[in-house]
Structure formats: C-alpha cells, structure tokens
Image (cartoon, rainbow, N blue to C red):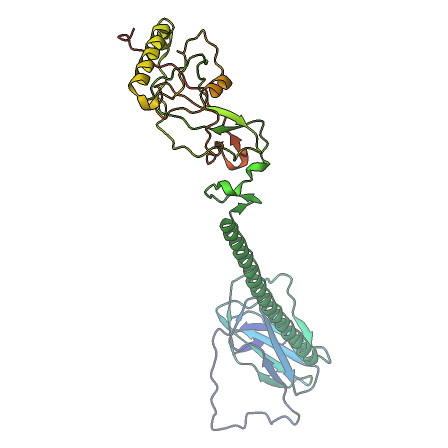
Length: 388
C-alpha cells in the first residue's frame, strides 16, 4: 500500500492498488535493524469488516504510548490515532467505503514503525456516518473481563433457555396427564352411572316392573274391591214361589282382613256379551212383562221335564214391580243349579280368593293406582223385533 505526505504533514491519500515487494541483490539502502523490540498489532477480525462494525486492534511490544495508522485503498484520507499511555487496545468503528481493502499499522513512541495487520476486506452499505458509534481505548484486562462477562451471559441465557424448555415440557406433560386422568375418571364414573342406572342422583335404569318390588300395603286405600266369579249367559230361567228376583252383582267391597277368605275356587266361564244398544233398551220397557211371563212358563216346563231337578226351589217371575232383595234370595235358595238362565247371575258369596285387586301402573314415580270398581252389567238382553 503506497501513500505520501508533504512537508507540512498533510497526506496525499492512498494509491488504489497494492504493490508486491521482492528482495533485491543489494541491501545497502536499507536502514539498520532497531535495537529495541518492534511493536506488533493483532486484529480480532481477519476476514471481512462490515460498515460500522467494531474492529479491535491489540498492541504489544515496543514502547508506549503507541500510535495506530489505518489506511484504505483509494482513500483520500489516512487515519492516525494516538493511543494514550497505559492502553494497549484500540477499537475502531469501520467507516471505510465498502467493497475495498484496509489495513492497520502500529508505531512506537520513538517513531519506530512496527508490524502491520493483514489486509481485510470492507463490506456493507455505503452509509458510513455510523451515528452514535465512537472508537474507544481499552486495556487487555478490560477486554478479557468483557469477554468473560459476555461468555457468562451467554451461558446464563442458554441455561435459562434449557430450564424454560424443561419446565415447559414438564408442565405440558403433567397438564396432559391431569386432563387425561380427569377425563378417564369422568368416563369411568359415567359408565358406572350407566351400569347402576343413576344419573344426577336419579334412577334412570329401564327395568321391567315387578309387583313384588312394591309394597302394596303401604298404599292408602279408601275402599277395596274384589272380583267375583261370573256364570255363563246360557242358563235357563230360575223360578220361585214367593221370593224376589235375584240381583246381579259384579263387585263387592271387602275388608283387608277378609281379603283372602272365600269359598272354593270356581272355574271362570265365558265373559258376558256386549251390552245392547240404547235403541233395544228403550224397546224393552214395553216387552218385559210378556217376556218374563214367557220365561216363567218355560221355566215351569223345564222343571217338569227334568225329574232330577224337581228339588230345585222355584222362584217367581222377575218383574220390575217386585223389589230386589239379595238376602231374601239367599234365604229361599240355598243351592242353585249349575244351569242358569241367559241373564248374568252374580252371587256376592261366590268369590275367587286367587284374584287380586286390579292395579294400573302409569309410571314409576306416579305410585300405585287401584282400579275403580267396574259398572254393573246390563241385566237385560237385547230383544229382537220378531220376539215382540
């Protein structure tokens, strides 16, 4: 690198090219070697220095105070820096033009030039003002302490980063395990609730209702009824000589203490026929007297034609003018024949002990509801128009 200085100490700039120096045959023009040691300069960057980047130069050997010369190719200026006594490190803020080359030179206090740095490349942008950045002087001890502090800070940052990673992994895994455990417990509890048939402390299990599961005795009853056995409608008319007509009954109120008492079970016969329509009922009022007279005649004929049944007590014809008295009928007819008239004859003394009260189950929380006693069946038969 070639530069020039006039007699006034003003520089003329630096040549744009580097020159190579080779050894010649005659060395008599060279000055003698200095008696003292030569100063050395050591840069911290030997590759490329970017614009506004600090370039550290460490000075050694020679005699303090040092001077530093920084020159760049094709630059109109040469930078001369006098290093104060006691400082051996100079930090230069690169303000050289990019895409060039630059070097540094050390000079001792006696004006002895020392060794220079290698040529480094300049790079970066063209804004070389570098506002706020100032070159500085330091000592080797301070630079070492600063380097140690930077290394310690980097180690602490790495440690914190490692700790943060560990904490994040542990918290994430523990949180996932807690959530998974809570979900598993909830699923197990839900499945157990389904098995038990309870949900929100309510019994939701669908099951078949069994009468043995409910205590019928705990249900208050205003009045209980018991079913009675019915005979078939295909029975001959019953006659009597002075006893009122028999009153058909369907149900009889009983006491709870006598609920299971009764006579011998009697086989259930065919159910009664469908009640006649209202039109036939209105027609009966004008036909009941002849019809019951005819029934009485047929009953007498049937009694005469059946010698074996002559002992059966005879009942008078049934008319609406005669009062209906059940006790009188029971007193006058201690035993009835198994063949009866077509009218439905029901006896309150003939009960089925095996028949339980009817129960209507609406739903489980509605309790047990007893069926009301059924209405009395019609004791009149439908009369066809031809029978009148």
